Length: 328
Image 1 (cartoon, one colour):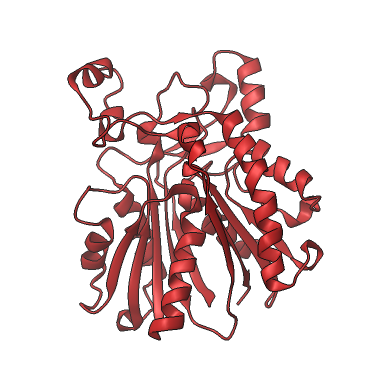
Image 2: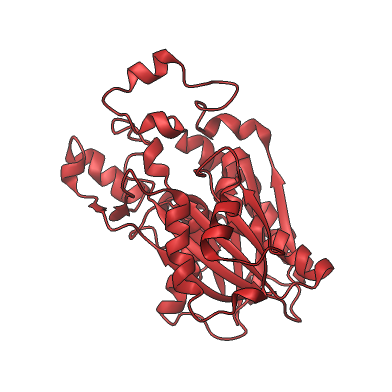
């Protein structure tokens, strides 16, 4: 399996992350060092995750024969509806054939490599021609402006990735630690904690939180979970390929924050030049982050045909998934 092509889309409205966004210079300096965002993008109130993904898809597919697409996977934590699947909506808007299957994948930051894992299984067992993976995320709708742990960390985006089978068969390493549930969550809006009157009335000045609930993150908890699980999982993945880290040409981790990416780079003793970090423009876009980083690396001519690229997603759950692909 290979990545045939990628397109991404940011909303028009952008927020420049400057000292003026914070109460004092100390807060700004901490954010700049630990998080690393300079610009984040925010979708307008009438634009959903599927709208962002659709714009990326229309750009990607303008010269593609749609009849060759046999399955559509949509990865998002901010889907349009509880039901039907957002993938079904995108299927209709793109005019895909009736025999093209669809599914939503609401797993968050590990969503892209998990979508690749599903696609690889379908290529192996069902002889599909092409699989379309779409991602759309609008996490800014779940950010409280006074919550410094998430303020100007997250951004909205849409991504489209076209996959096709090849002689190269990727392997995958994945897992989950449910004790990390409380480190990153949006509790309101589901069956366990519905948006009751008290919650709605508490957000009269922040009405956007009443769409998805409020995103709560324990940054130190996420970092601890990441360093506890991801390095071991990376080495387990390398074993499946009989490769060493020295033989990997590029590494793209989930674009979480500077502090997380830098900590993994040091823990794995990776040369900094191998590790891609594009947080400055866009921020943490959840499942969109890894494919956007791949696309930006291509735009900068950092990839060469045949090189090995290790990608590893991790986050909400706490879940993780990674693979190694060859540049097409």
